[in-house]
Image (cartoon, rainbow, N blue to C red):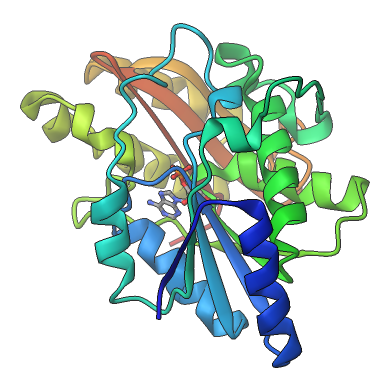
Length: 281
Ligand code: AMP
């Protein structure tokens, strides 16, 4: 049975009742508008724990004033309908006033992998993410939390946050779930115009090509500057295209450690992000 939960108190009671039965608990934090990529996270969570909580909360703390907080798709009833067919046991959908009540005044500023990349265009983003995931971890007391590699920098920020604050939760990464043409699934893909949707898979095609080239010995800086030209020639406005250490996300000028390529680029008004491991194949 899928329980709908709005209050942290009821959530705690529910989790306590599970604990009494000896069940382990996994959390899948989302902002809703659930697609197949999110559902894959739910299925992965259920392979690790007996009970799965899916949180749905469009977190105001991680949006800047000019971003799409007001228009971000909110489809709670549809989301719940989708989860009924999945191994999910509770949907936790608090409102903003519950998460950030009158007088709330706390800031968490993650460093390390939170520096640069997404933080250049979105300076407050990871502070907002760190705050909300810490609250969700405390409220659920979950043993596991699943995060998608789609948001690779976010995954690394959360892993470090859990280490730095000694939060007793294990972070489980989930691979990027893609459309058949390679475009990473995202709730924001609905913003793409028909023409931009046709061009969007080019982002992943270029990442795949760069990954092979760099793994095959092409100097990374040369490969990346060629990749940048390829993206620009197909209409992308590139915020960044970089190779970073796969764990620390520090810049990696040479391919001499586990590496990840990360990109953010705009097509029209839609900003897409993607990433890939540097590997042959
Ligand atoms: P969001 O609702 O966009 O905040 O995403 C919630 C979680 O789902 C995050 O951990 C995302 O990384 C993950 N996620 C979203 N889209 C995908 C995807 N296409 N593949 C894998 N994970 C995803």
